Structures are given as C-alpha cells and as structure tokens.
Length: 210
Image 1 (spheres, rainbow, N blue to C red):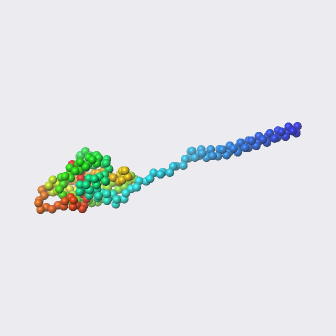
Image 2: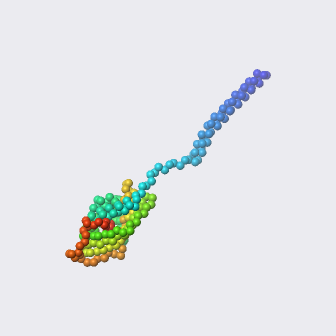
Image 3: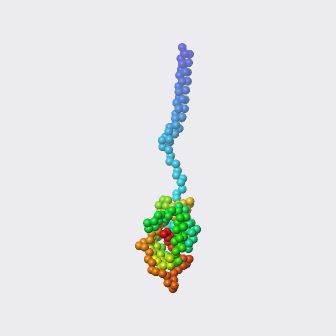
C-alpha cells in the first residue's frame, strides 16, 4: 500500500512539474507574440526621407529675370533658353491663342524682334512670391523705342511662374500684358538719337508675340 501511494505521489509530482514547465514555455512564447500583436496594431510611422524642395532666394530669381531679359534684349536665344522650360507657355493681354512650347515661342520672338530698330526699357516694382514647390514674379515695365521705323512707347506688366524642372528653377509660364495700348509718335527723324539694342543696360521685357 505504501509503495502504491509513493508511486502515485511521484506521478503527481511529474505531472505537476510537466504542467509547470509547459506553462512557463507558453508564458515566454506568448510574450513576444503579444508584443508583435501590439506592434501590428500600432506600427511605428516610417521616417520621411524625401528631401525638402530647396527654394531659391528672391535675389536669385530677380537676377535670373534680369539675365533672361538681357538675353532677350540682345537676341541671344540660347542664353534666354537657359531660363525657360521646354514646355513653357506664353500668353498676352490680347485675345490670342497661347503659345505652347519654347520652339514655337522662339519663332514668334524672332519675327517680332526683327521689327525693332532700337529700344530703351525700365523695369519697376518687381515682386517675388514662393510656395512649397513653385514661385512667381510680377513686375511693371516701360518701353520706348523704334519699331518699323516708327517711334513708339508702351507700358505693361509681366507675371512669370517658376517651377523646379530637372534640378533648375525655370520659367514655365509667361504672361505679358500691354496696358492701354502703345503710343506711336511718327517716323524717326534723322537727328533723333535712340540707343541701339546692344547698348542697352536696362533689360527689356519678354515681348508679347504678335
């Protein structure tokens, strides 16, 4: 009887030890599982490694505008193209179809520039504004010169839109409007002196193609 009791007690101890070990294994195994469940429900936000768009300064864009207009003034198409996107658009205050694309603009620009014998321009009140990934500039201009051998003067304003294109801040839209129409004063007299295009120090505005 004593042996039976001892054998039974040993069996109970083995069962108890086995159950205790099983509970310990389950406890250790469930801990990371519960943690994984928690992480699955509340994932850690991934870090945003997208580099921020580096905006130019107002001074840089103002300088670009001046250089672009200077290139327009002397008829340097390649230098002017440095500041324009290939898919840039051009509109005017006239009821005309917009010019789409740099190549189409160059054709209109060269036709218009061939009509200009001399000019003098003043650019005023340039304002530049920024958003996250684009910028725009507005300015007023006053132009006087000789077009088709006729003295003329005009006033207007321009808005340029800049966007980051292939790593460079380029003009993607140009809207140039003449205000109240130009004034033609008559044929140029032989003694009337006008500075030549190449002598201009003040940049001229991007023309409104006709």
